[in-house]
Length: 113
Image (cartoon, rainbow, N blue to C red; front, side, top):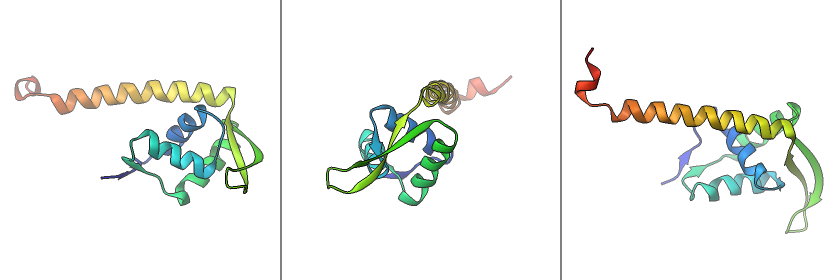
């Protein structure tokens, strides 16, 4: 069963997908879905504005190219600033996941003072 991307995580997921190699927008969407084992569903209507925000922030650069279907497309590549942002946000995400795991695994005796 596929899930929608958690709010606030799409840009992080896009940065990670792009860090695996330059890709056009639809390819970024497919890469996220594939890397998640098809468990995450990304809407095109949300992805393209996120890619534009990443470009405006200087986290990705773009170039025009031709897809495997011979269509003209904008390809996204990670910049040095994007790689640093990905590293920082990945670290923060891991800390959050660890904290959530601790809370969700808590037993009644851990909840009392």
